[in-house]
Image 1: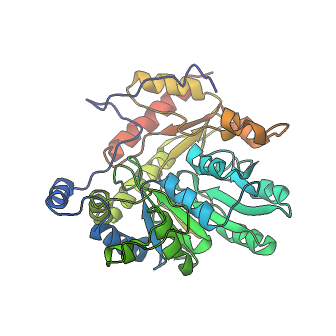
Image 2: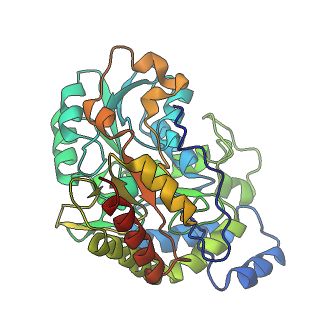
Length: 387
């Protein structure tokens, strides 16, 4: 995993520096948090219920929402509600945040990594199809950087093979496919509200379930296996029949999310404008490729902007000298020791080709379009001076 150009300390956000990430804090955050602190409920309370309802209406076409403490919590709940058991075969992306795949280790499932599509860095459909066996229980996929997978094709594969689809949409909040919420295209969809996502509660997440009858079970499991409405309604001795966890969102987190949701249209517009600015101003040639969406049926909300270049290390070094922070953000999971037993004698030719060439550029609501143009011009200048 070692790469000498990767080991830069975090860039301080001061002066004319452009950090790679910056949290979006809604303008009413301090007032809202103060109001919650003056109430009885700072943990899971009525604002969590309100958030689930409003989030469902705004982003999920009315589907059931289970608010939790992190995107990782949501993934673990999805795997449990999907009835994934020890030694079940699960097809997963080799290129993603480890949070996608680590919860499968909790369960003892057998991970089968799929290669990437080099044009989008999403999971390769061809690789997925080659990995399917009679033992395959689920396909897990990520919309990398906000770029959507081929949701039609994945649904066709799942239906044909009677496989569960689990969508890690941590990087694609608010996206639509064929004018419908992307949550309509998977049995389970998760979102993350970690500090640098589109909207944040400091840390938090949500699980959206296609089967509405799983909602109550999911809400029990996120809180020790206890039927919370019954307990608060006066039945304090109700039984626990399922192993549960402490995965709930808090009202403090929910108030931040509710405020951010009011600003979401502005967030979407700004992030997509930065994305388009990069596409328009970075000169693509044999020295550099911009990872971009190719699907006209997709209405996406971008989270990362990624470039691919054989001169990645030089670009990162030279940009850093100009106080512009870049990095690779995610790394191939097959190189981590915790996944070693799943990758013996396995090869991922597309990942091998890309692994030392991709670089993520700054994108957040604290940077301006002028900043994005500055980054683009610096990249063009650096590459122009390379023979």
